View 1 (tube, one colour):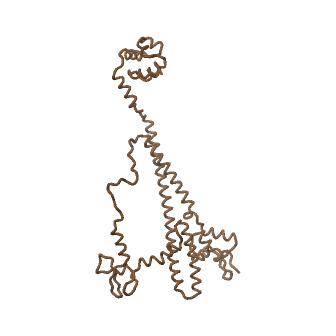
View 2 (view 1 turned 30 degrees about the vertical axis):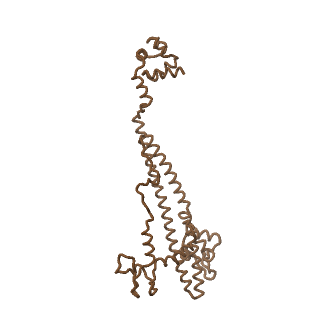
Length: 361
């Protein structure tokens, strides 16, 4: 404890840190320093003559205010270490490499997101076309009177249902494919087409606007010349008139606003770039891996590979047996089954209904 007190007392009097530490380790106290001279400090304690002379002058003068101020300035506001020019150049080069790698990771992330979105868009468009065909088939089935035609339509409905179920599962949608079909077949026509309240004729909104009421959602029936406002327009205007959203200009932001950084020196910029790089790099790798392993983008087989694999297993391909597996594995439509068999160079036997490599004799 005595060494520490001596060390602090010497610092407060204005003696530098190295000399104060050396005198305190030697076991000297302030009272002992007042009794010794310059030659003793030089010979016995290894101080240089200039430093020893300065120590004697400071100890003889006693405590002064400027010494205490100098001590406090060193403790409370230490001098910043000067970065050498070489270290600064090294950091700038390293920062440039890190920024280039960060830009590359962000580009990979963007490409992965675009590929995932493009795959989902293709599947969604295909599902929409399949649903349209199912709706048409169901309407024809209800209007058909011949039993043989109903059997054909039911077979087509089963095939289209398999395609819709496959795309529906790929997109991970809620509900079932039949829910989409029912909505498209039952609810959508009721919401879009309007019936005349007088004669009951169905009206297309694109061709039935009342020219005498351009500012209102009024329709006119060209058969009986009756002008009316549909109930759907009335309900929409009622909802729009209600003030469901209230904006308070004095309300604080929902998400916390981060404070501005206090400083942007070499260390803070390096840490910021490193954290952003780690986060973005991990996300890019994960997104790329998900897209590569996704059933939407990379899970479908090539049609020629499927044909070779099926022929290697049983030497023939038959529509009744292999159509469902063809749809699920390759992603091609059911109506293109025979086209792909012909394109692959297979021969069809009308008696057995099988596709083979060799022509039947």
